[in-house]
Image (cartoon, rainbow, N blue to C red; front, side):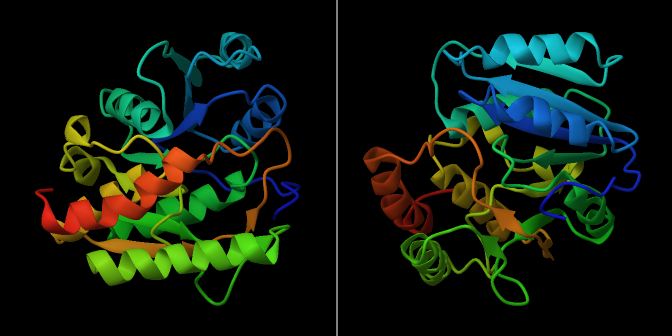
Length: 244
């Protein structure tokens, strides 16, 4: 599964939103495997990557028979902002199920059909690293401890009953995603993921978790910065005592 050797099963009426920033090496590999999923369409949201990722995405789209589209962003950068733009664009399509995933090959495309099947009975399906044990490959112990601690912290502060609230691999029913009021989300970094899930929690929407195997990025560098880390510490408290 983690080697991407298996061809995934069919997934109909599904769109995958993939934000990119300096993913020139990984994006072609990811797209190759996403295109093996019959019926799946892909929206690449590029944040004006200086390494040419946007141009590569355009080239891949041109040869995809309409299955790949590209949204180029040049202002208001950040993972959260990129996802807002991409998910809002996705809601303008006819997709019944809208997935979000990283472009760095840490999320296995072959998990998508299973997540879509689970979404038939849930409003959002979280691809979880922490269901049925711990399913993380190539992480140092310090990184794993930080991630587990972050998820406990989020559960304690917000009350979200999810094992992996910080996972960026998700599948949404379009009706549920439309209720999240994406345009008013404030977070810019990874805490965007918690903010979205908190709105699901507050609206009593159905959350399911699908076990995945998470593999540390194979190319490029992590986008985690001190500012993003501090925002992640503050956001759960802002959500709990603010209005969402």
